[in-house]
Image (cartoon, rainbow, N blue to C red; front, side, top):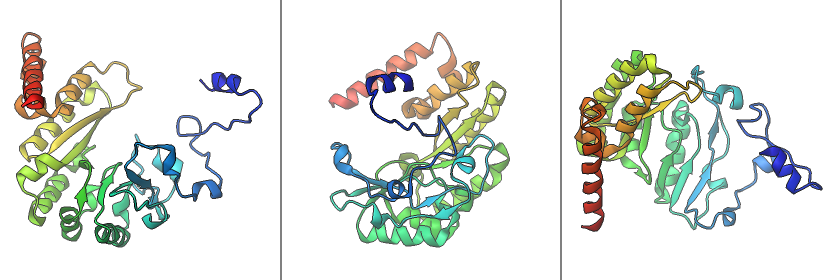
Length: 265
């Protein structure tokens, strides 16, 4: 792809970067700190940027520590905010690592009556009652996402979901607005992934299964992903019903009919 790009622009110096090319490569400071030119994307309706970089977690499957290094504050969103938009999107990888900063910038968002989306999710293990109340208070323009990547975190995950309830999240609100990324590395972790999905379902939260694309033999995980990530299937059926070869087509047909009726009704 890069060679093809260079062949189309033979007289142009092209510098290729990004996570898929070089984790250590960075933009020049004057480019990194430039306010986004939102006119390039006329269909965009959200201010987009980072208020922090890095993460302290060092999860084995994540490149953030290698790419961004230690957690630190970067820019206040007012530096990349476009007042024409009522949505704001944070690309931060672990914004809750700095509670005071999180509260400060969400105060600012609330003062502007902005709808928020934290694209990379929030670290539920860092949520206390004050943060939980703030999450209840803010308006979101996408799902409020957390992660349950390790079965060993079960106790703390359930404790923190209880905190969300204490802060005002009802079961209906959790189902409508809260999802958990479920990382399943390979087929050997299928049972763990299924258990986490079912536990979240019992707690009224959505699951969104993700897996390691380098593991090619992931047939069981793909079935788990297709079930969990299609919310109507996740909430209406158990995985065993979905997996039955003779029944799965009927389930999907029923799902499609219901979706079509909703769209026309």
